[in-house]
Length: 375
Image (tube, rainbow, N blue to C red; front, side, top):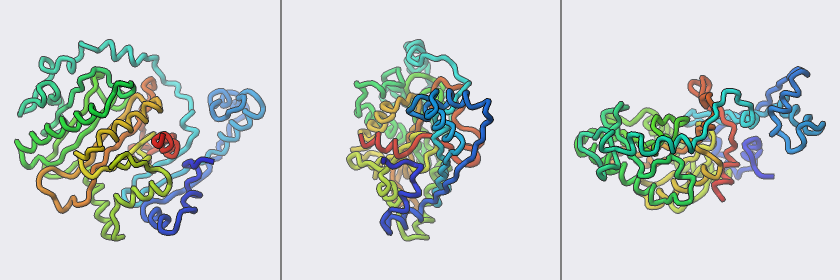
């Protein structure tokens, strides 16, 4: 039987001693069973709404029993990263729960309706420039409502943000994005040497926070200190090294490898994250931003998303500051986070108070994602 997040405690128990010690330094796991007792009048609705919980006839006695037993006894796996305090609650039942608040939407039609009419289709006319101008004439612009003192965008040549789902999408397009964004950040740093903390993000469509359909990524460069979550990770990694005499990032990769949750794509290691922020989170670990295998690795990750029918996602890149090497950031790699943001037709947000203030709640299994990555 293939491993699943539900069998994580058993998998951990079977690790070799050193791998088990490493896992216990980084993670903790709690498994519980929630007893849910629906009244008889609710059973027909449950068997219809949760029919995907069985491969048998959901209207037949065996199928109904399997569905109702699964609902009555729901296993929840809670994984905690001891170092960063990131935590995720997993329950597969939530993946097939009915969502009543949905809007009929034809995503491709909406994308095509905006073609040629949006501001990013006419960047020189309808987008502002940064103080130092633009990169590649039409490739970048300033954000009209900024996050930070330096905030820009890379405008993609192709209008559709779903291009990653098509065969013609190529790694060269990712390489161009990375090169263009870095050239923009270098301009910021040259203009203001204290602007050293580069952050690259890509919000694909409205579920991921994009306000404009046309494909684009965003870039900021902060002053004095890095953005809070990046800085928090740096401090956590330093504390881990001081306490255990080990490199946090190397151990993070090793733990995922020992569980079968890591894939090598050239010089980049891709992780099916054990404590994902939301469904299908991958982390790509590279030695530097200009690593030759990084564009192809990001391309592969997006192709994994395409194969999983993901249409809306976030991508974010953590990296050390620009300029002269900073001893405080020694050993900090480049980390590319990618995460699925869910059904574009769902009116509900994919995060609520639980995710904002307590723990991530995820239905997609990292072990299933890892299998997709290996393919």
